Image (cartoon, rainbow, N blue to C red; front, side):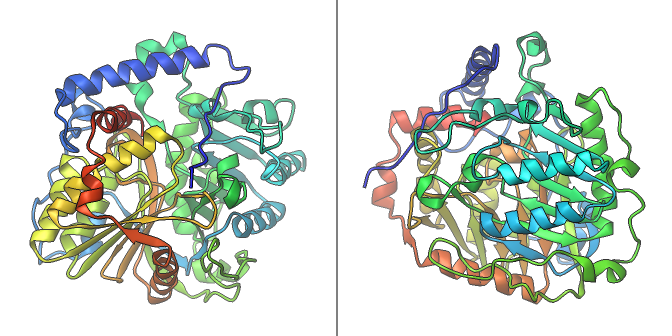
Length: 487
């Protein structure tokens, strides 16, 4: 069956096509120089350090420190311990949209949205309309989106013509908006910092109801699965702890790119100090159905008891939460590791983590998506499969009932620790993107995630070494090379 790829084209954004072309060329040249043309899936791990974006972090290279728990390891590497009610996990766009619309309607103090890719379209228009209406009521609404969103404003003949960037949607409304790291020609001198993107997907309402995960506010996230929609996951929690932990970072990011300055109180105004006191008010998921296309979501009667969790909020130049997360998952595993990662392209550092876990007898399982966002990304991901198989990992490719991309990002260790959020298993998420991830160890959450994983496995096939060897050609390597800084 032929895959249904679409090629995005820019519409009405001056200089953006040229700016993206220039950036892509510079990124490619940098990657080629650094990689030295070595046709492996390793060696890309020095780009950020070579341009001075981050400081190196010294971590153990083999096994876990037996005197330190995985929780202590995460906390010593920048993760915040938070108390929250048990999370609701939305595995369908319909479930998340229904919950989000209800939460926005009930907002009393503030709504803050930070999203990687954003556009208004026929499938998510209600969300944008709800934000505009809430701002008109006098509730402050802030919308921060990554400037790469403009690259994704395109027309698909299967979709409605109205696919509009947030800057157009919110113009003339009371919603306050800003672009993260604008890609304009006059900012070309800002390289290499223009390569840094904000990949987080966060909606925070009244400083304590928080959604975070893989869903963007764009057409791919909300389109039907048979029209190139995404299968994804969004975590919903109610946690004043998480609100207080996130607010300073969100305010600082906003202030970098907006003429209007915010502080933490603007984003998380006077939240309650007691999760138990407010846990009963969280919006419940409205979608508890399951199907081949929409794996099981948390039911509406999810237990609201307080649990401990850990929040990783990576900001490039300040924290290295994602490398620490993968280090913890692989070093502390005793039996198995599961990764669901559409854009898995492990670098040398990540491959060392994988190999060391395999050498200790850990079973490493990685699930990719058959349907990708483009032929180039398909080749880039496939190129890195062979080294994983040769090291002893098990690689599976998931095929949805439609042509949907399996977009959500899962890391699970021994069915005891589960991480859900925005990071991919690749160089960009480790070194070049702001990311957010929640780590849970409570039994119910792990059970829900495990059940969803079981549903995914029914539509996944194993990849053989013979098949992966076919994906090591020159065109695959070039696609991988281009994707190292940009994928």
